[in-house]
Length: 95
Image (cartoon, rainbow, N blue to C red; front, top):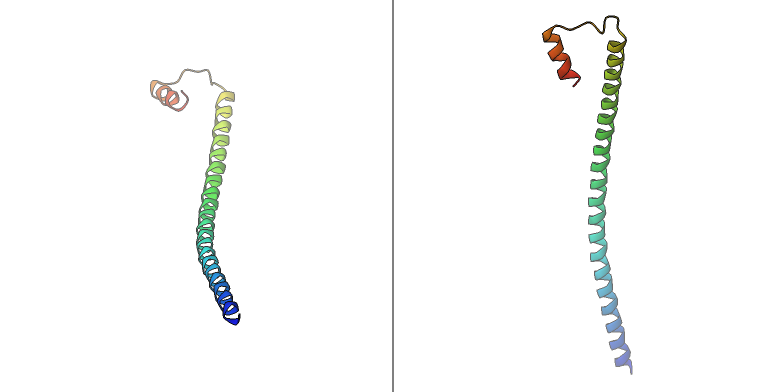
């Protein structure tokens, strides 16, 4: 009888050891995945910051061009003909 108890205890110990080994490997793999995910998140946050800065600069530039356009449209003598050179340049800037 004590031999069976020892065998059962040994089998239980082996099963628990196998489970512990499996869970340890799984935890190691999950930790590596977590490190990778955090690195990707940091890269995406940096890309987001660069993108937002680009959009802000683009909006500032658009506002400046809008101001310039309004100034040119409201200037005195805006209907006067331009020289050929200035006319070509204006058509390239404002198609």
